[in-house]
Length: 319
Image (cartoon, rainbow, N blue to C red; front, top):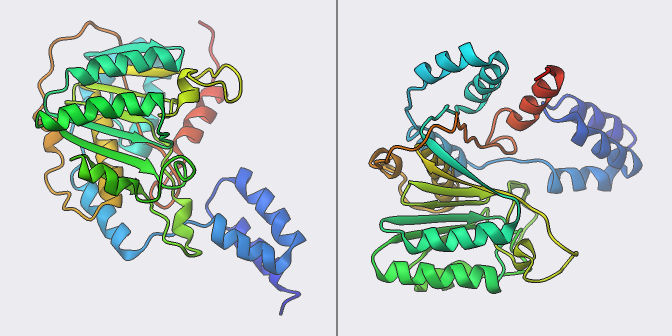
């Protein structure tokens, strides 16, 4: 039976509905280390959700955004079939919507976005939501935290999500409790439980900051000092970010709250009020913005970003 285990394991992995780029290295591991390799696979690669998580996903999906973008898509179809096709893919696979009336600012370096973040945070009046894969207690995060504590004292609803593995080496294990004492509602995403639990593979790499549902920041910039070149950990760090202002921020709000309520034992009914009750000033026409989320199975049923990129490269066009 032990001799047959590698063959059975390979057949199992090959038949999984998953990315072939990930399957091939794991097949090599399982064939090289028949028993131990299979143990490694189930501990470090497979992703399963418990009954509570599956129930919570259903609850969160009921609070999804209802947004009518048919007119926007019809206009876009007449302007660019390529762009129209890409947005339709995002809508069908990820439930994303096309938003107009959203101003977009681009930051080629983390330190530039850092300054904009602080300016917008000082103007927060209702709520601030922040999610990051890595949070490090140094200049970047400490500067943000000082403002958040001020805002809590002013009655602003502040919520924080950090990834428990991403911040494993930079935050103490009970950091969410420290934050709760300041009045910040905080939760580590997919908190480690101390056992060989494959739920540890469901990580959140999102970097989101939402202010009053009107302004949103995202990109590749974690809340750690190398991302703003306050320290030179690996030389000069080049990462980018964007700032959205307008209706598209509602989708970023939903993405944050989805991760927040997935990890926190708190009723999620009514979370849609955070984007339904937001009014926007008119913004200059900067085209169409389509925020969307992506992630591992089983939380996401499709590889949205991968499918989008393949489709883009498969249909090159001349400008």
